Length: 480
Ligand code: UDP
Image (cartoon, rainbow, N blue to C red; front, side, top):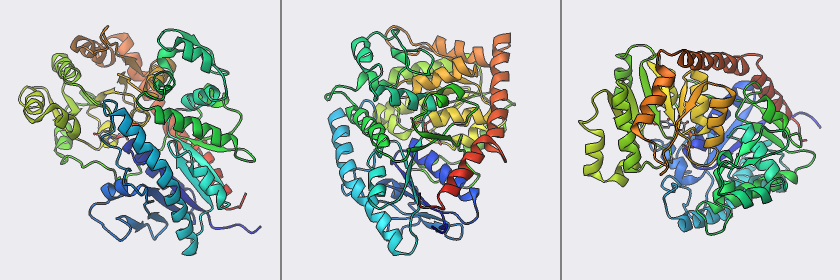
């Protein structure tokens, strides 16, 4: 079979935490070989949010970079593809119903994209899909196109799901799910407590639970990987050096660490409007490594009490801070309350509704990141050498925090009180433990700097992740 021009279709679930690493991967693939073509595709609603100023018949986007990168939405039929308001506190039934309709229509939509590209003489040679699209491999297989899962959480979390859905520990987890400190053993992994497992395995296994649809989606995904022949390919947004043990724990698949994928300097399209860039001017005026940057990601909610304690702790730390309080969080608080919370009472810091986080983290003034530990946030922080105060909540965040604190020693974990609330005094203590003058704080900062160097090497020319990416693109030249 003669080699074909590699054309990779990158499919992503329509959430910011999925779109960002998918778009970054798309750009890395493009850079891996001069002839590779990439089509980036997410659900119509998210696509229109990404490209509001460039409407076309397909809903915006279009092509760039001499048409080597093209943005083409897939229809999810029902417009269910805007998941931004489906946060932990939202109506569980509604979220689960939205997921069900998204799955049914999304598979048809993606089949349409594959057919349309083939009809235009741009046949896809590989499909790459993010973790909440368990049907993508089947759609690709039906058209004879090999696919790869793009895992956008740590390899450790993939290993946990892999073993859990292959019968390891499922009974133990079910029996002890309310005992957060109960220790679970999984093949090849260091022992984990119930409290550090992905929350979907402990909190969402019952059909009436919030996010039960995520539990079943991930189960379907892991099962579908088992059907791939010869072996499923899994690209992971991590690098060999960050997760040696966990990567070795999933031998059943071809697991290729290709990350951390980071912004390439191109303008990054996303589904949130940026605040004007005044915060960059503010950052420019702050001393080196003095600022605490605070963000809980793109979907986490923030109850009034949490925000109040957080801001008080930051004020009491006496350090300058930049805190993201998203528009939807403000809306949930109510206009008057939000104005009071993030208005004049802020003396040492500023609040924004959204910022260019990767740019903020790489600014010389930033010395600490108070984070919910979404995997993208963790990787962006590691790549910038910024030590973290970890405030994990759901999904993979508790495991991610463990990697930061226990394995990499590049941050500290904030403790919540008996009622599950993070108190102001704890915020202050943790910020001090990272930015203060103690030896322990200096060591945390040193480790953060060390990991920055390791990650730069892995993703740089000839690095482990770069070689894996090049091998994957090379594979996309052949049919199988
Ligand atoms: N982000 C951003 N500006 C903000 C807050 C978040 O650009 O003000 C980006 C952040 O850089 C990251 C993504 O949103 O790439 C959030 O992904 P993550 O995995 O950290 O958390 P999630 O939102 O999925 O919980």
